[in-house]
Amino acid sequence: MKSIKNILITGGAGFIGSALIRSLVINSEYKVVNIDKLTYSGSLESLKSIENRKNYIFEKLDICDSINLQRVINDSKPDLVIHLAAESHVDRSIDEPIDFIQTNVIGTFNVLEGVRIYYQSLKGLKKDNFRFLHVSTDEVYGDLKNTNNFFSEETRYDPSSPYSASKASSDHLVRAWHRTYNLPVLITNCSNNYGPYQFPEKLIPHMILTAITLKPLPVYGDGKQIRDWLYVDDHVSALMIVALQGKIGETYNIGGNNEIKNIEVVQQICSILDELLPINNSEISSYSELITYVEDRPGHDVRYAIDSSKINKSLGWKPNENFESGIRKTIMWYLKNHAWLKSIQNDNYKLVRLGKSK
Ligand SMILES: NC(=O)c1ccc[n+]([C@@H]2O[C@H](COP(=O)([O-])OP(=O)(O)OC[C@H]3O[C@@H](n4cnc5c(N)ncnc54)[C@H](O)[C@@H]3O)[C@@H](O)[C@H]2O)c1
Image (cartoon, rainbow, N blue to C red; front, side, top):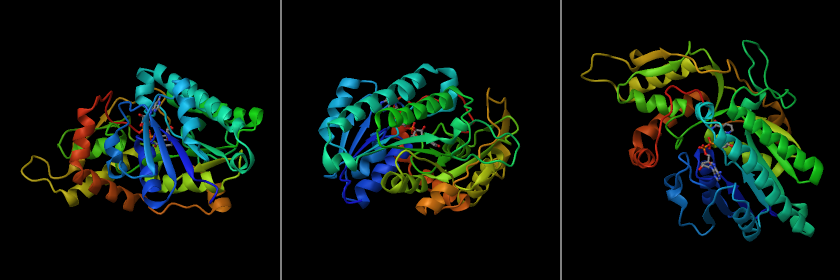
């Protein structure tokens, strides 16, 4: 879209935001401004490869700081805002929900108000072409239990955790700002992402990094919880298609068509590690012997599964990776990128519990 020149991204130092920014800054001429508070899960190390590019600016900022947020929005003159900043870890939301309400609800309110004031000051084509994309999760829909159903864009919201309830609240605010103030918004609800640069407390990096130190691999409950996994670069391509071509006011579900039980994810990681990094000199012969089952977490949803036919049919998006190809790439990346890991672990790194599913 020629009319889009300046893109403002919140939460761009996180897992998905940094993948989005690396792709935009390297592959396009958009001028990208990244607002991030750099909480424990945000790291500028993930953006090292593009930090000196002319079309990239970083602003360390909390989205709850409405005065400075307004200044950065006005100064960066965005044609497109992509809002990813959030507290994102379900287990942390159970232990300390306050940060989730603060950032995901109040923070999103601040972003919406800042963007609304800016949008209302625009004129002509700059105003006509302006877009706001809110990045959300399939967890707002709750639990499909052991059914054959899928989440569609019409599925009723029924969140189970403080994280998903805070994201559901933010989605409602975004829709209300569209209906009440005509803010030109789009919403995406995506399934579990995985890939390089994911913070090591999440299920896949946690299992890879624990396995290679030959420590027990803790799996919640019976491990039969089903998630739909999407490689992060496929999420990035979906976000840009929705941002540039989606219909204003609409919601798009994004999924990978990779419904897999958590235990199977862990088994697959173990079998790829057996091949790439065979165990020598140990009492065990396969990483899968490290799997142990631990007490399930409260409110743990059994099954999420996304119907992504709307984005596929209306915008032509589909994922490039299947789980087999994506998980192999991811494991190889973690095996090669110890420097990134070390910097993350030195930086306020704190594991709350082990064996996460998201
Ligand atoms: N990871 C997934 O599987 C997944 C799936 C669907 C949707 N999402 C959504 O995508 C978005 C990004 O997820 P992620 O996995 O990259 O999360 P992440 O935790 O890796 O990154 C979040 C980023 O937001 C920043 N941040 C947090 N609070 C902030 C604040 N108050 N002000 C400014 N910045 C702040 C953090 O520093 C971090 O860089 C979230 O909104 C999440 O709900 C994630």
